[in-house]
Image (tube, rainbow, N blue to C red; front, side, top):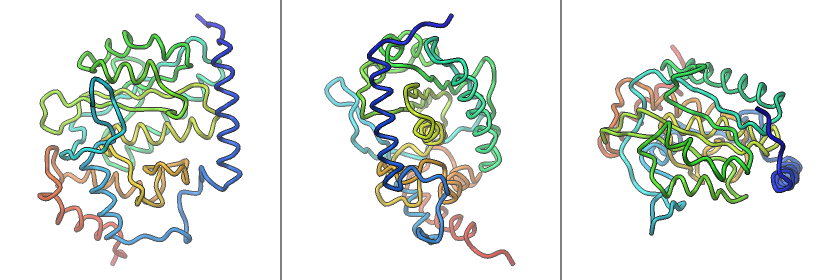
Length: 273
């Protein structure tokens, strides 16, 4: 049942619109996917892959979740990814339908890129994407725990107390601690204007596939906090192709995978003969 928006939610929507307008006016949130102004080599792709796939963006400190990079092993899905969308009851119906369709289209694109089965489903998903207004974020903990019981209290608090400088977030679950992702939850602020919201869809779902970190060196890339790109780029597609190359196994360390990562990157960027 539809629920009316709060005054606070309307105010933060206006704030995000100003942020988006400013970014676009500065030439950021690009939708071109990269071009001749941002060339890259296979060595750069391999370097960026290692920075994104063998580190995580968040760490727990003192009962809180903070942005602090920590080393990790390789994480990826070894089972089909079923993306289920949950849109809050205060979100406009037109926007809800638009977001659901966009997520379904992006899931199909990711499946083509990776060669891994990824699709949107109506029920029984193992990757939930929540699109929520602020009033829904603050009471989302029970719902999040329903779909990922192992979600820690600092993660729940991070979502329920999400500050305006955080647009979206994703959490993955590896219950066996072997690098195989079994569940994921992404949370996206519904108040974001279209281009920022799409940016969140692209980044958080892609990160939920195993590229868990951001890097200031990654360019042209959506996995960079500078907001230069607002869509998955060709460079990012290469990173996902590397991640889902069957020769790379869940749980591999950066050292053990380094030579293989470079070989795959070189092969992807070498002219066909």
